[in-house]
Length: 296
Image 1 (cartoon, rainbow, N blue to C red):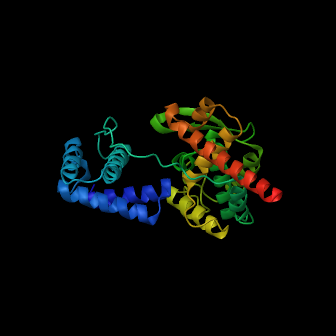
Image 2 (cartoon, rainbow, N blue to C red; image 1 turned 90 degrees about the vertical axis):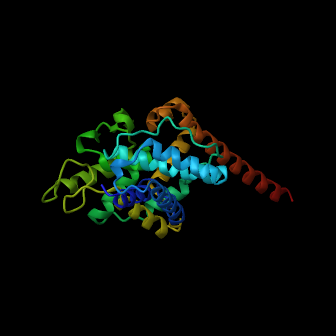
Image 3 (cartoon, rainbow, N blue to C red; image 1 turned 120 degrees about the horizontal axis):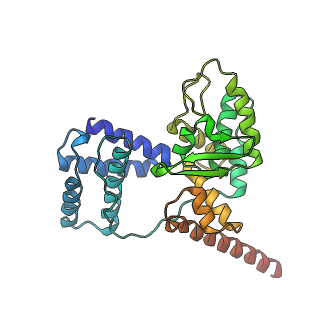
């Protein structure tokens, strides 16, 4: 595979999977162009661990700040991981440590914002019912967008209310779905069954029978976010973040949340406890400020 094609595929993946802003995507693109100019390789299959190490050594010698170095290293590491998952390369950067930097807390949506977002979708059409079913499932089950789009119809037990998810590392987990999910999925499956033809066994299909892509769902979610007055930066992973934070705010044990999210390490899930604590503090401050206003 040509390097340019591999890089373009990775940038599309970042946009659809993580919903990164145009500014962030542009920064990643510049980092990758710089890396690829350094390696002078034309085929993605030729990339090696030494290319990564030599490039970071060069950047360090140029006196880059830790923040810039960490971002560039993260971009390249993510690029390698993407290529490995796609079967393009076999090299892994999993054991390589990145330069230390501050942790950025994930953005979440409040209950009110979720209601606004979901309320902006009309289910009068097949497309609307498809989109809302996906949104409900993504949020209520805390799915990664790749897990959502790759779901097969036999992985969803709508009657009993659970999903059988095959996540990262091919690990399987059972995730319950709420009654609203069951309701919308039941309606959607009735319409899906009426399709003239289906291409594959994916749960979520367009009207022509083709599977829904990550990029499609990302763009649909962004459109509904804008229509709901929530801005253009709403993305699928934000629904997963909101799912985790909602559970923790309502007293769910951290280990249970870890299992539902499919995290291999509890440390990864711990980031959401910081978000939950921050939101509780903001709620407390708002309530106390209101109380002070009454007393005044």
